[in-house]
Length: 261
Image (tube, rainbow, N blue to C red):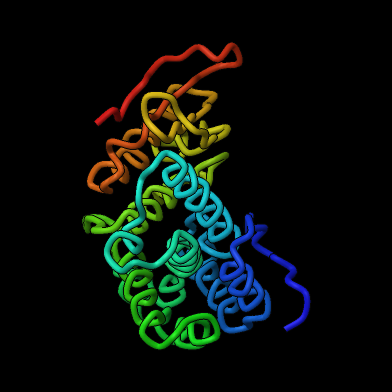
């Protein structure tokens, strides 16, 4: 397979299974072409934000960071609790769901999660036998497909891993990369709020394991925090684990602390 290039810049942290998968992704023309097709649908034909490799990278990195914080704070991944697999397998599930959740956009936006599940099955059948026994591959595949399907409202994740991916999907909203569709060039609450988000940070929190800090240049950014991130957190199963701070202005004046659900 050769050296792992890690085109998505994923922090491996001694997870050899994850490293093996990243090597497969690096050389997967089918997946990379599906990302390209997803962006043709989203950007070129619908005027929406990126749903290709950059989005996949952002979601995968955010999801893995949150999962690792939760594990550090003693929260057990569902695949560990229910199937006796390891934390490294939970990371594999989160990574795969994150990079595959929007490939159905290559076909259509409405109901794209269903098409993502269908397209992902073929990719998982190629990837997983190189790493898992047949039984383990079925388990991991089922968990990945569940997370893909549940990333889109109104479905509620039944696993920690799926909840992490759902929330991570909303965190790709810096500098106009909103997950809420808005028409380019049109001035309304959608476009103004999307362009107001300057930076999104994920840190280990104090009272709750995960602190998400959203920095914005305009109060309109609260629309993103409320209608995008808040909506994803509610029903994700992670309500007790996440605290969100929204901060506005160069002076860092904190104007809202929400979603302590």
